[in-house]
Structure formats: structure tokens, C-alpha cells
Length: 65
Image (cartoon, rainbow, N blue to C red; front, top):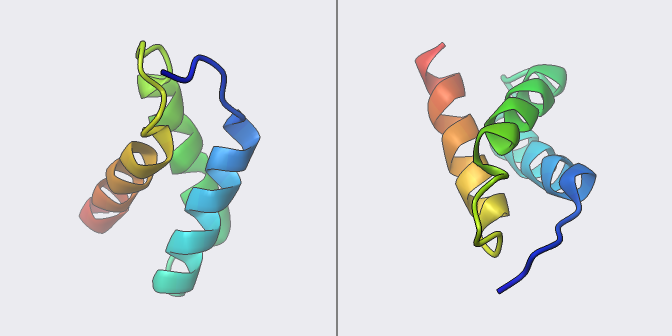
């Protein structure tokens, strides 16, 4: 189990992937939402999948707006 993670790196990875996949979305908005979504789940005791979970939550939220 991983206990430490690089918050900035996770947000950068999620932003880069979603901006490449959905160029119609504003990168700054992706970054803002990714940051909020990561903050919501960062207290989890298991942090191995934070990047994937953050990306999924960000994509879902941006699709709704």
C-alpha cells in the first residue's frame, strides 16, 4: 500500500490525458475539477489508484456540465 503521493503530478497527468482526449474542454477547467476531485478522495487509506479515480470523476463531472 502506498501512503505518499504527488498531488501535483496526479493533477498534471489527469489534465494532460483529458485535454488530449477532449480538446474542446478548457485545460484550466480540467485542472480545477481534477484538483477538487482529488481533494475529495485523498483521505483514502489506499492511494494506489488515485490517478485513475481522479480522472474518472473529473471526466464524469465535466461531461455533465
